[in-house]
Amino acid sequence: MIENAAKLPEMEPVMVEHKELKLIGIPCIGLNDMGGKYRHAKEALLSSAKHLPHIVNPQIHYGLWPHGPSQSHPDTHVYILCVEVESYDDIPEWFLRLTVPAHRCVVVANKDGNFEAAGQAVEAYLREKGLQTSAGNRTYTICERYNYEGEGFARYSLPLVD
Image (cartoon, rainbow, N blue to C red; front, side, top):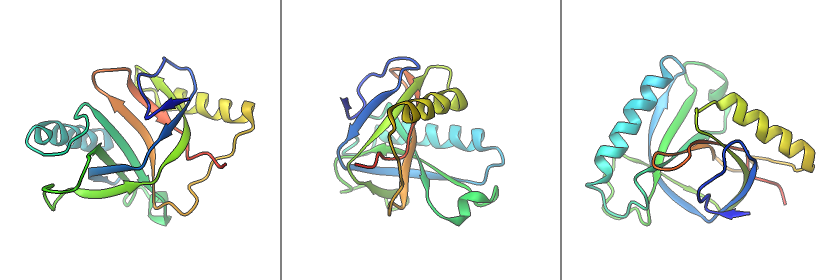
């Protein structure tokens, strides 16, 4: 098990354990041109990170999904691109603040950003090992991570059920 998702091997399922994460983010709403919305959020986080206190690593971004009925509609689907912070002190009020509880999950890195292939590898590993996942009562879960100076894209499972 890798704690806090250090460098991940390519297309190899790995169990990752995260401590509680304090995140600040920028929401991208609606599936229309989600790629463009993601690129704008990425650039905003990368450029503002050098001026913000408490950023853990500006090169690592997490993609989160809220859980709720709005996610099933293309116009109200929400994706939130976030960066981890040590503290919310002195963070501008226009950033969304999210605290994600500690959790374990299965993660697969894919340098090409192939969400489907990485997701299939995650699902196959969960089936093979008989692992159960659930969002439980969590409002938000991590769906992916980008390490711009490392392996690139990584797909996350829902948190593992103990």
